[in-house]
Image (tube, rainbow, N blue to C red; front, side, top):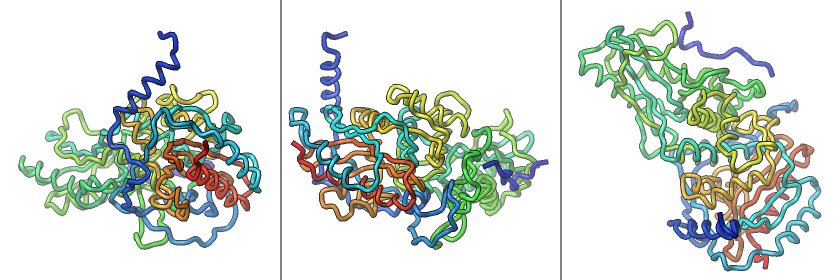
Length: 497
């Protein structure tokens, strides 16, 4: 028999005369209908804490996959706050008739020429017209690192929908006296009370246990056999291309549809926190403890199984919305949440939720926006060096979000903000024109640095960009990141007429 708490997985080996004019006019009409836009002069300065969930984004020197160097001492990085914060992305403060920037190429070329690192791929587009203002090696696919999460986020917003919530439920079978805890994909549960004002901890297992006990006692049930259902996700929970040692670093964990705080363990005061090898079992134990505290006698089921056909749902707690979860994943560069979103994209498209189907489902959801012949994904978080995305395809997705009038429209607003939040807290902080107006997703591995997002230039024009480089010597990775930041800062400072 499979005893439920021992869940740790075994190690894995490493019709118009002018279609273009019509499209442009349609885009203008859509853009005028949008409300609530925030210009460069209006910023919400509610700062949130940031995390080292994808440690490579914050500290590229941290030993990671494909790194054989000994561990190094790293600075403490604050844990994410339970409450999400947002700095809305600015929009163009000029209309379609404003002159399109013309001197962008000269400014970027000067920075690239002065850089000690060569081989960048990049593309810059005008957010109003979708005109490409600069392109260099833009169609060459590269290892994107955590910029992969841009595609995952866009696919989640498009295919699942921004207002969708994930439910963790309990079901009771009167005939057998079996109560089943079913994981519904929420990896941001808390062990305590549900907190409606939070993203991490929106649903709480104590609340679920209390609501479950109330329903049971209403039917004079005081003793149950407790089972666990994690069948929402299928296949292997840990990708063969990931390193098991990254669990101890807090970078990743086996992907299950039930977790507390993305499986972090240990004191929250520690500089670095590991993740658990058996996240669903930990959540199950926490729920069992809370259920016993309500006075319900609990006997454990001998093996894990879905609820029987005769079982009825008696209680549930729900996650934050998918839009809020997407923002959390992007701001904190959380690999676990990104992989969960990949699984949920697959489920939304009628497939099994798994690490195998997730990457394919993300690409399928974005098939109208990206070149499927160029883009290759093996995970949805960006941990794998085998992922490949071209800068042009990234900016195509970003531009689609600028023109969108559905959940995708919030994509860039969900990114970290230069000098203010998430993985950009310490970047662009000293650049007056860039602080608060750069919204971008970072990507860093030992030999990779990338940045994709949007920026408002000095004349109030909104630009989207993607800048990538891989196969960089490790001793030049910080110089490569400086070059990236210099380019984005130049765009922020640019009149560019």
